[in-house]
Image (tube, rainbow, N blue to C red; front, top):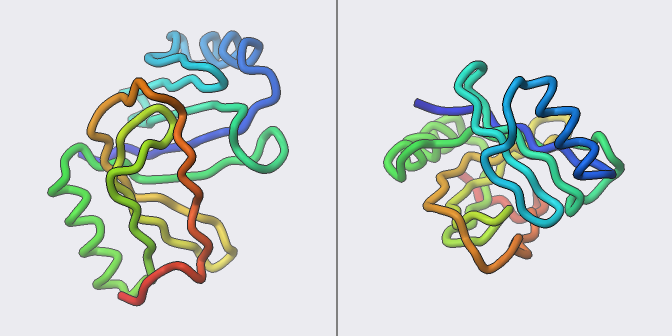
Length: 139
C-alpha cells in the first residue's frame, strides 16, 4: 500500500519536533541531526521535517512512497504510461535512508518523488541533488 510523503523545511528542529509531536499525538520514529521523521498510519503519511533543504522555512516537497521495489516499478510504469518525463536515482542515500526514486514535475514546477526505502543509512543525511526538470528522461 502506498503512503503519501510530505517533507517540510523548518528553521528550528527541536522546536518543530515539539510542535509536531503535540499536533500528531506521537513522537518521531527517527531523529538525526537536522532531521526528524514520523511514519503515521492515520493518516497514512511519511512526514518529515529538516533543516537541510533548500528554500525558506515552510517550503516542502511531496512524494509517494512504495512499500516494495515491485510497487516502485509499478509506479514507474504508471508514470511512463502517462508519458510523464521522469528522472531516476537508484541506490542513493537521502534523508538518512538508502532509496530508489524517480522524480517528476507537475505543470506548476512542483517536484514529486516516487520512492522505495531499502533501510536506514547510518552514514549520514546524504548529498543527493534533486534533478532539474531538464534531467528527466522521456517516457
